[in-house]
Image 1 (tube, rainbow, N blue to C red):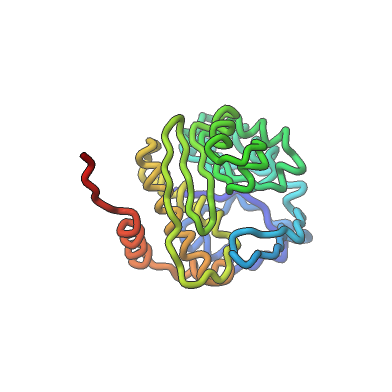
Image 2 (image 1 turned 135 degrees about the vertical axis):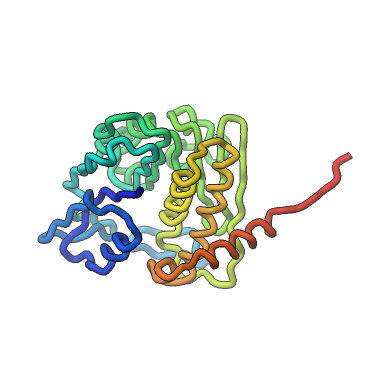
Length: 266
């Protein structure tokens, strides 16, 4: 059972809300501010389609958003805190009637620039953080991602996921490290939303399997990477809307073939 808690403006297309509700996602916690505008971001990607420059960030309805978790979801065992203001993320945790088995947090450099202390406060309360390599370096002041992950561990999270775009993702847990490559694609059309897709696939896999061990986190990384590889193939959500289970299964097999090998060690 899945629910979303968020806010959109009157400009948000009803067809997108229907897209979610038709997939059995409870939207009771989604507030619609009819006179407001939905969050807006724009940026310019570099030639490698991995690095980007933010041009515009408009919080709009998110600026004054006070989330309300539906009563039937206040005991959820998995909570995915999307990329919102850290105070908003904390307020969601404050409303939970029991401590979730797993709390995953996504964030971005915008909050590091504008609400760093609030971000540190919520990071203390989560089990997993997912950020990209640039953000990990900014948050810790360390260029080495191994050192950066260690410092983020010390902030609270037991698991640190560092996304590296076309170069895959790293999972850190104590002294354990796992690397998952990104699937090589002939063309990347639009990487916007790939990180969100990764985080959603990662969290969804863990919620479905209800296994939060390091070994299963590895599987979740692969699953999230698989979904993200579809996201970048078209603009926005176009590719994800009509994605089939068969396509996902086929690409998971490609990931397995990409990473599986046998070597004799003497």
